[in-house]
Length: 88
Image (cartoon, rainbow, N blue to C red):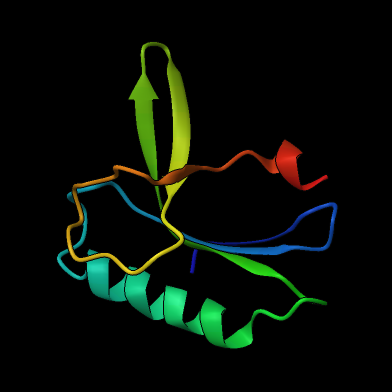
C-alpha cells in the first residue's frame, strides 16, 4: 500500500500506485485490495481504493483507479478518476 488518505467526508482511500506495465502481479494486488475494501467498508466507515495509475491527457496527468475486480492490467476503460474534491 502506498497511500492511505482520509478524505474530508471521512472516507478512507487506500491506493497502491503503479504504472500499467510495472508489476506482473498488478491484477492480483488490485483484486486483493478490492476484496479487503469490500469486506471492511461499512456505511459509517466507507473505504475506496485499489491500484491507481497515472493517465496523461495532453499536458494533464489524471490518476485512475478501478472499483471492481480486474483481469487485464492494461485496460482502464471505465476506471474512476480520483478527484478528492468530490468527497468534501
